[in-house]
Length: 356
Image 1 (cartoon, rainbow, N blue to C red):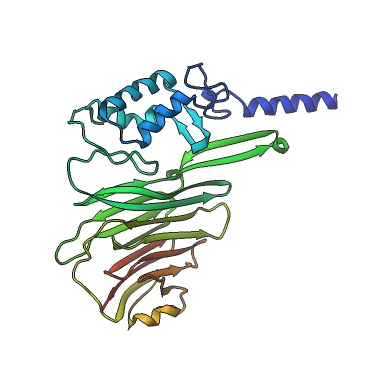
Image 2: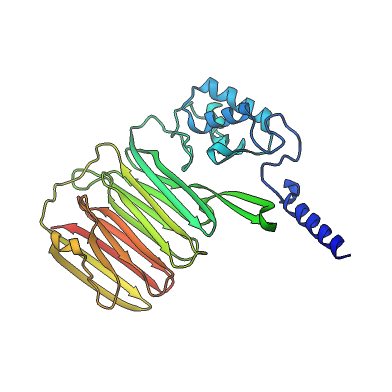
């Protein structure tokens, strides 16, 4: 009887973790209905993978896009399959915006002329560019939470030269083993489930510089943002104290020539900082030679806030709030004024620094 019970228990467990997708079990790539673009193990066939990758990444002409959209729809229908070599889940819905664009259909049902779009690069959404100048950036993202992880390195990003707002994300996967490794279950999802990442480019003028703003919302009342010269790196690092919390690094920097605004070559750095620590509000203004920040400046007593030269003419703002389980580090260039903001339950910080 004991042996039979063990066999039944193992069989039940195998059934639980390898169930049909329409009931939420097993890999998302196990097809409920057989289609020609999905192999029996849930992998995309070569034709399906090539059609999906062309739509997602390549700047193909309109006719090629239309043909690939029709092909992918026939191969997959409304289902998904894996492209393990790229760590991707392929679906028609993921590239529907590109197909709509090729057919002259906008998301709201209206039509517009066929226009080249943002590169169909994993990490930010496809958006049509209406014959305006663009600026080139490069971004990297690393997100982890427990055994889940995802990253993108040196991702090309284009923004409208007159200003743009984009959401950024990384594709993530979380693999768990059960029954001593007999069962391995992998879940695929976007980093937006853990952190909403935004990139804003603001064009300057004769009196102000082009700026980049990166922001991260951890979806639990904790946010951070950094704004600085678009020609320098802007970066957010959030390091958790506990494994179940989200670790995040997101970085973007301009690759083109950007407007730096009026030249400011002062030897001093002025930082206006306001901290609210559980209702205790402290405001300070620090004015020191730039070199003094090489070893770090702690402008607020009884706080672990530190402003320090990061190298390559950039400044880091680091703090580990007593009310949070994360430490924050935000980096921006010193060429133009920069602003950092941090907020978590019971704590907030805002600091603006510029050369004088």
